[in-house]
Image (cartoon, rainbow, N blue to C red; front, side):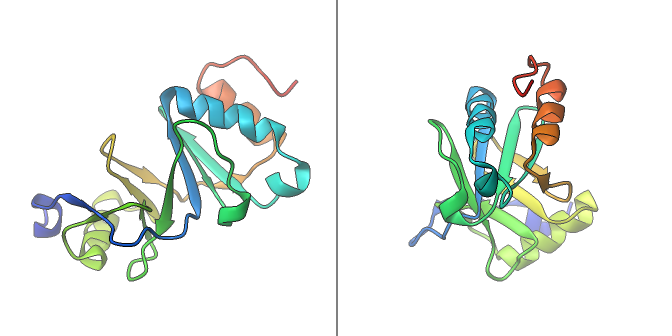
Length: 148
């Protein structure tokens, strides 16, 4: 394991970054999914989403990102645009070095590095928010088809 991945922690950001992604886990992810189904078509068309396990990540301009209870926000790093981070937290190590180490380890980019729960989520499979994509996410989670 590279030195960049071995010893670092999180610290609150002095100034939160502008959100470019809504991130939700567990029940909040399901609430966010339901909220996406309610968006006007023109707003949904400006968003992209990916899901895996218990997480749903929706990217787009901050003004278009939906909100539900439990959602948090992320944005790409200034010096490492391939590494997305929470808007209110930052690593205590050099973000560019950490981004390179994670890209080498996971062989994918961009990546979302999340604080709580601790996770690395690939963002290279973001797709436009559409009824078909939301149906696939619901099926992946074993949810009833709410888009029918």
